[in-house]
Length: 551
Image 1 (cartoon, helix red, strand yellow):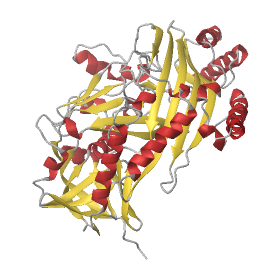
Image 2 (cartoon, rainbow, N blue to C red):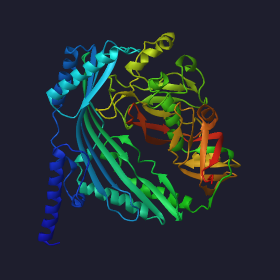
Image 3 (cartoon, rainbow, N blue to C red):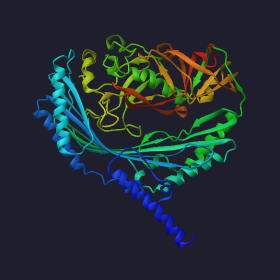
Image 4 (spheres, rainbow, N blue to C red):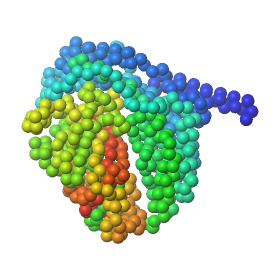
């Protein structure tokens, strides 16, 4: 390559990065970077504005809380964050041409409690005058709400906390040269394309955030998060309009940095996944008669279905009716009749936690409560709910009967600092079966049934009491063997009946992690749920057809 051509390319990349940096320095919304940037040796860190000093963020937080207290709040807190986001993706399997999208934002959300009533205000300006104005506005609104409020806010006690914490991370993805991000996705694409008929849908979202929490009780914490969401799915197609898509089991949404995706053997994992997808895609196509069948869900399907049904139903604000006019209620209510009762199969033991490497790992939640693992389901019996300081007091009688003080389980979450705090399901871990059982073992004795993989799109009613799933890769099982791909079928269930019909669980080898969006509040705002679960065999599930039209 001639020096002049090389210099020209470097100039194009550098000036494109400079232009993008000028846009982001003003902290605008998401920006698509010019195409030359993907070949740049520079990193995203050189594009983003200089990070705000943690001491300044802490000063803004305490200023806001003091302003709310001076205005008459009996309690106030704030979540204040600087967030950087980068997405790199190439979703067209016919060509590899990744694009970059960057976003830089500063946001905050203030809560104030006056005479037992809440109010919330948010903003995007990192100035003392802005946070003070928001804090005073929250107090004014809360005072107005208190005149008509019929339900008073009661807080479970929690210790004052101070300190710093950050996600365990070996390599910050924002310091990795952009050309290395491109090269990595290119290597993933090549690994999939080495297998005939296989292809990859490739993308990774990276988030880096510094978040400060302060409360009028004296808590002040600073946390730095790195979160990685790989959108890397490997598919294969032999039939027109039909294909098999399989997740790479080692590439899952996690807290952590570049090491979450770029690790020794990742290309081999992708190639093995492509080979599996191609083998499944060779199966003939068919449809299934409606009826009830035994069905095996892989770990991703079981985890996503559990998270969207039972997991969401365990959120205590839904149980108490606080979300009735928003995301809905819960079939697991009232607590007095549900706690200690069998609600799912006795094979199920479920724990909630927000520890690494779960996607939303944190040391302190958005109430300033330290996160710890806690049991939710023990041998099929409901033993607790996902709670916050605001909701935990509703379980006072139950906790007292078990020798416990009402306390939050650390599930207060504002997915972004400017969003209201809600009860959010923590990462749920479903314990695998205690006997050796692979995915194949779960259906080897099945005379006629189905295997569902990658089924994560579950629709439910407002109470989470019933629903159906219509996506995923579905395969017919005859005499313990996979014989066909099935299309045009969906699975309808009553939540309570479905989870009590669980007949067997796979062992630890069958565990997969599912992560997916959910919504809370009014208006709805984005939340994230994640679940790690083994595969499972259900005795009978209602299979319906999606290819019937009334015409």
